[in-house]
Image (cartoon, rainbow, N blue to C red; front, side):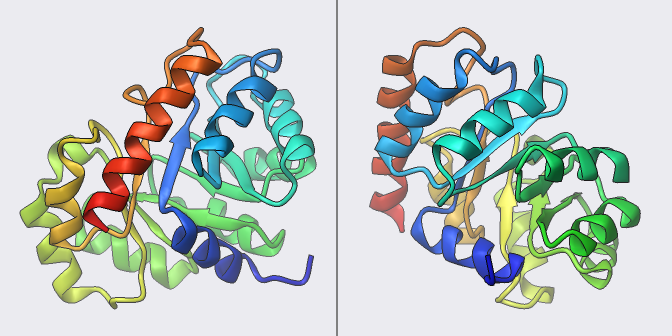
Amino acid sequence: MNTTPDALLASNLQQLPLVAILRGLTPVEAPAIGQALTSAGFVLLEVPLNSPQPLDSIAALCAQHPELLIGAGTVMSATDVRNVHAAGGRLIISPHFDAEVVHEALRLGLACMPGVATPSEAFAALKAGAHALKLFPAEMIAPNVVKALRAVLSASVPLLPVGGIGPDNMGAYKKAGATGFGIGSSLYKPGQSAAQTLALAQHFVHNWRAIA
């Protein structure tokens, strides 16, 4: 694919800037859950690497939806990045900022979204080449903090709060300058059915479009 990782991520964020965090997903469940999410409009899917057989789930989702931006969360090392790339993943998300992780993602042509919680971390991640910033944990980063960060960061930098995000608090973060969100247990819990996932995904999409 000729599309650069930053352009691909920007395009997906424009479609629907909500990242489905599928912690605990198994390879057997992946196709049905992936179909439920994409049916609701999700185009960004993340399988954390501390899930059961995460690389197999990523491979299954990528095979099923090659047009989407699918990858891994809880990426902690350059080796993790290479493993995700080998599985077909194109999105690298971490709970923290590690320059080696960012550099390896860039080397392999993957979209990269490290986790940051302070202005220093944010600017260091951007200097390393990060395409977007995951504001984590959002429980510690209130909307007024997002507003302060947005005042000093370029408007072109995507900011996605993650942690404790639900349909009811998206509006305050969006108003403060959040580009989108990573959504975990309020969207998907291990063992959850595809029907339940679809209903929750539709609810999130409806709420996002109501505030967008």
